[in-house]
Amino acid sequence: MKKRKRKDHFGKSERPTNAHFENLIELRESNPRGYARLGDGPNRAVENYENEQMASTFEYRAGAEQLLDLMKRLPAVYARLSAETKLMVERYAERKRAHEIVNEHVK
Image 1 (cartoon, rainbow, N blue to C red):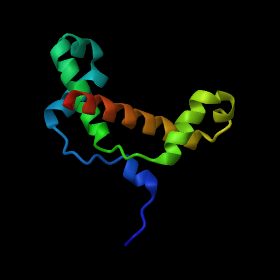
Image 2: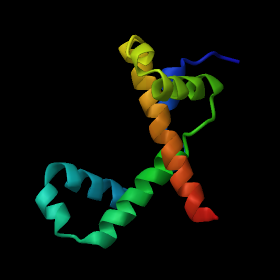
Image 3: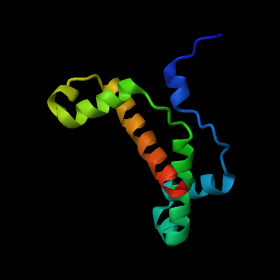
Image 4: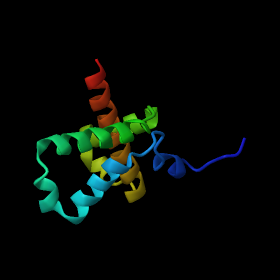
């Protein structure tokens, strides 16, 4: 079995993308005022789509959980970590939160 770098795994989505939502996301980035005019319905739908995409890549990692705990309990120690480690923890926290939101709606 071939070894992969962990960085490669984090960026990939397991769910297929939806062109409609991808176009709305692009509109949000390129024309925020036009996107705001669409109203609340599309905004919530895009947020749900993004959460589902991010949640599909969530995988529990004990080490990342410990770093999240460290970030909350000892911010001075957490601040000494490398920028790459902090970025990994932030991405993990985003995926974890999205996973919690998606599973909250399932219940």
